[in-house]
Amino acid sequence: MKKSILSGALSCLVFLLFSGQTTQAQDTRLLRNPSISHGKIAFLYAGDIWLSDLDGSHVKRITAYEGVEFNPRFSPDGKTIAFTGDYDGNMDVYTVPVTGGDPVRLTWHPGPDMVVDWTPDGKSILFASGRTRAPYADMDQLWTVSLDGTSPERFILPRAVNGQFSPDGKKFVYEAIPRWESEFRNYRGGQNNPLRIFDLESHSTEKLPFENSRDMDPVWMGDVIYFLSDRDHAMNVWTYDTSTKDLKQLSHFTEFDSKNLSGSDGILIIENGGYLYTLDTAAGGEPQKLSITVNGDFPWARPHWTGISKYIESAAISPEGKRAVLSARGDVFTVPASKGNYRNLTQSPGVADRAVAWSPDGQHISWFSDEGGEYHLVIADQFGNNPKKVQIEHPTFFYKPDWSPDSKYLTYYDANRSLWIYELSTGKFTHVADEGFAHPEHVIFGEWSPDSKWLAYTKRLTNEYSAIFIYSLAQNKSYQLTDGMSDCN
Image 1: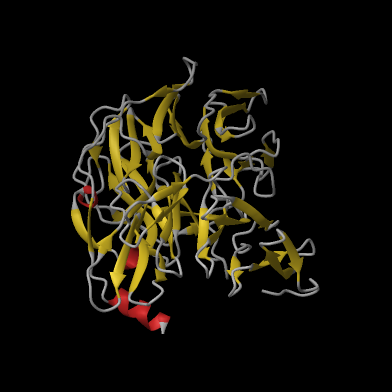
Image 2: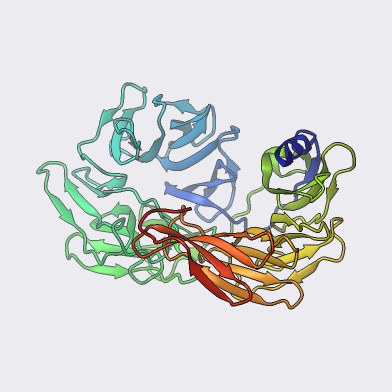
């Protein structure tokens, strides 16, 4: 019954949301994937490739296709940009002149191809691909494709994901394996591997000094390899002198990790905190932030009407089944099952309102909101009136709110894998249990007993089997119901 009512409510959902912003601020942020060559900088903004002078002036758009571009890389002569384009439902290698024009597609494999660099002679493009891998197509093999688009050829290394040729083209510095948790700051585990130098003539390999740090994005200029490393606990620029074997730290960012590094003619370009910085390796000193303002026609940013059905993040049914509450595009709505009006309860642009729940007595709707900077609990009536903001100690990300049958309690779990109960009358938060294993599939949430006196939940034990527990609100105590000798959920 509830399922059919919710389906009916959502099928009626033709509600349109007016949204968007038209203004552009100075010093545009979220500039990504910079590349530098011959006094020009190529970078990504809003999924397109843009070009500027070395000082950040004279910004112009190079690509404007509705697909998204990645990894722009200048040719050795600075006249052409190679990039990965997510066009026509696939990620392939393309080129475009620095003066602009139609992109030329060079690869046609149904798997993703990610541009890495150009060969020193400027005749071919090096890219990462998993086209020979099965069943998991990790992009951990390098290939080359010529500018005429003839059949790509495997690079000599059996496994590599990124790298750059030495200036004389006789050696190649590279990253050996992909990383699947790139935002794990100060990660020290098996995903970290040393950068390696491969001699293309003798086929010998040399490892750069390694401290179990994350080392990436090597750039080879002269006798020095520049790379990003978090060996000082923030991702910064380091150098390795191939002659003296000395290591040196060049940048000292602390607030944000540096994300991408490129270099040419003694100048490095660094992405950090959404801005671009240059560093003159001859002059020394700290990186200098570029003042770049991107002005353009952004159809997605102008005010417009859009359907919200495909953006629904959470939903719940009213007790009588006459309406449903849902969250979509950062707002909370209620919609009728058959007759009635659609209501936007929050109307909060720039705020993420999410994870909705409707109390069994029909009196309250709850959700989590990040208005003010940190997530907190909001409880209001079904019209969104008189919202009560409940601050939560140690704010983080919260999931799956669930009302008790008597509508006196609300349970949820957080990003720390902890299960909590909130009591409406007292404002008291009670910690119930923790899920001890950090895994996306290992979550902990509760199910209420009909009398609202018990909360049942599943928790993984130290032997990695799951057991069923019940928590007594009266005794403030949990009891294990299954023996933990097999998985129970």
